[in-house]
Length: 103
Image 1 (tube, rainbow, N blue to C red):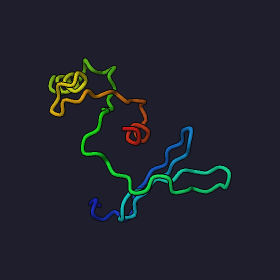
Image 2: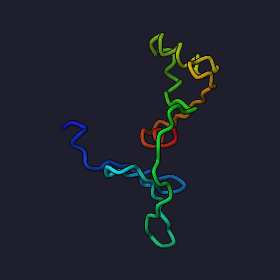
Image 3: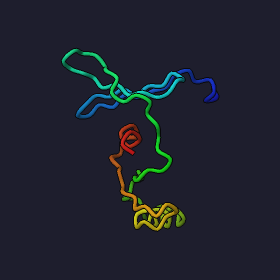
């Protein structure tokens, strides 16, 4: 189905805290499990993705296998020579949901 048919989306992240992020068409909100009461409590209302971040998430161990253009781009943003002039840092733990959430 096309994405326009989606009615809800979300994910749950199990880590030092259990966080559930959901959207039902009116913004995206994060809820943290409160083990004392056994319920999820709104902890991150109206989550927004920043226009430009400071992290990238790629498996650097495979750098030599990347296309030359990707190598140049990652080298540029690592050193602060990309379009924004910001120096980016890697965040990669090989778990799609956790990488997405942290980045």
